Length: 558
Image 1 (cartoon, rainbow, N blue to C red):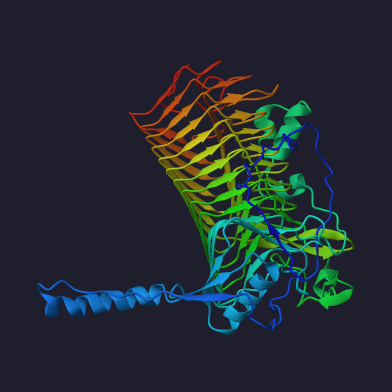
Image 2 (tube, rainbow, N blue to C red; image 1 turned 180 degrees about the vertical axis):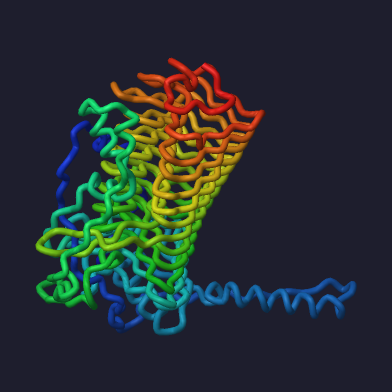
């Protein structure tokens, strides 16, 4: 029976989610996460190709009469290269607005070394079932292009949970003109979630410091708190039986212990050795029971002129998780949510292992992230890294805007941790907020950040460093403005910059019009690691520029 809905509606406008995540006193968060395996085997072949229309496009070229002999060789070489690039377009397959036919076409393409599939205009391919590994469409194992025109691929709201797209090792998927909606990876076994504060305490001592200040200790004394060493997982985790899940009544066994990836990427999972190129495509309302609400990339992925909106993740990466190589160009990541961190984008993550119905920390995975000419806006987490989180990786953000993101604990806009390397250039970090530290930017745990020709402005923190919070790390600001940031809590200080045991270098940089509830409003540092060149200025901050800081940087007055 045909299983689809034809839909002439335009792509829906994402709705703004209400602010759920920032509330004082959030603690003891628990939840569920799947520990079953998402297999790497694709769906079995589906017989028949009825309804799949083949259209052949032949390119014919003719030369001008002038210089024909000389021109022929160059043109033949050019056309040959173009045919190689667009080999699948030469025999594009038109897929009618029928979900079964789409599944058949992908299966056939996998068996025939790839293809370009033209999906029906304005069609909604409604998915109601999945393979035994929890994929709504067959796993991509060949170079396959899905071209749409205001076309949707959507998991039916009444269907059992499953992800929509999975790119396996060696697979190459290109998406154009599509909406991927409603994918969901669901728990096979209920597990208690790690508390975001517990995870954050392994990266930074700021949580303990804020607790101590609220308990009456002087700020200088409170800042001596150091990050906690991660607790070793119980020895029994090494002997844990392979994780299993019930899928349509069948017990499916994982290969080894539970690891990130098996329940990641409710809209799109790109496995190691896989590749995805995404153009003019929207991921909306996908929900991951682990990481990467919309997209989880363990291979190589490009997002170009695309949108990632209103997705959620139980752990990291409400919009996108990356532990491979990811490039985002001219795209928007908006209104996504995650519990632990990286509500918009998580470049890297803390891994977990299950033991006695609880997830335990088990190291980190990291990635390489490039963001250019894009907007990361309105994302929210109860943990840390509201807009972008980098754990132990490399992140480059250029000609972009990171704004209106929220993190309860730290790093409302961007957070770099665990020896990560961050480059921020020609960009704006504005109007982000946290109840903790680092409203705009937080750099912690021996990380390095370089900020060039950018603005960190109008961010808010409940405690320290509304503009920049730097802890045991090195941050360089060049040709940059840190302005209009506010540290608003009862014990708040360092509205512009707060440095704890690290190094902050200011070159041709302005720190102005920031404020804090307590001195200083401009720059706070507990060491002599804040250095200004003669073209930098710290001015017009309230209640003071640097007065009240344990160490006053040379060149700062008042």
